[in-house]
Length: 265
Image 1 (cartoon, rainbow, N blue to C red):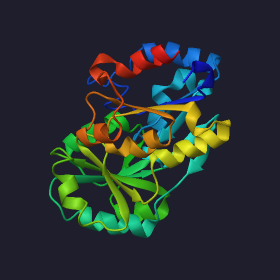
Image 2: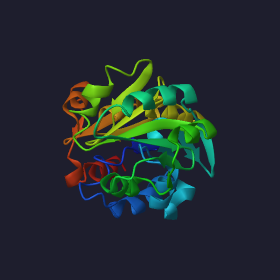
Image 3: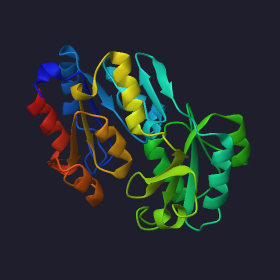
Image 4: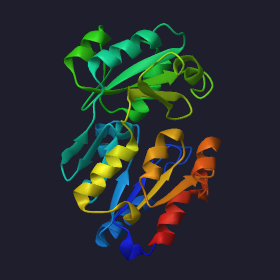
């Protein structure tokens, strides 16, 4: 794909664009300027909430789009252009199952704020890394009923791929239950994913699938990678994803996404 044919470059953050330190590589900001100058919309696509992503990319908001909450919403040019919330009844159903398990901590993600009811200090330390707006509530079920909820993010004191997935996936029926990182698992409505949000963005900017490049590292990135014309997985990515998307770039520790974007440009 020639650079003149590219209109969108979408990248997952944690485990993909961000190195293990979780510090944003400074080079991405100069690359955003270059992409924008060439008519390419750079799009961070993350399980993180919109306010947190807007803080991370505050200096470049006029030049990017954002896919947040694992595809629950897409923001572009100052407005939410796509939103796919999970019905409250489904959230409450899943919460009931999650709360029966030991060592799992649910966080209900709204459009502007996330809600939780745990006082576990380790959990609160972890969530503050990815959530700029999170509120401790006494009645989580009431918060669900009174707010538009996109998904439940479940933090696991053990690796989610080994623990929470094994516990929750067999029990939660009719909802999308996917590992979204080393110690996080997301629950949302079927059909809500980064791929659907990316399709909405491509339509908004007048781009086709073949004009999009995407990067990911975990199974929650699969639909986004499939919705792009050119898809890459970092070398540190989840083994099953690398089987499905065999275009492998250097790991996040080696700044593989930065390397590939430079190559594309």
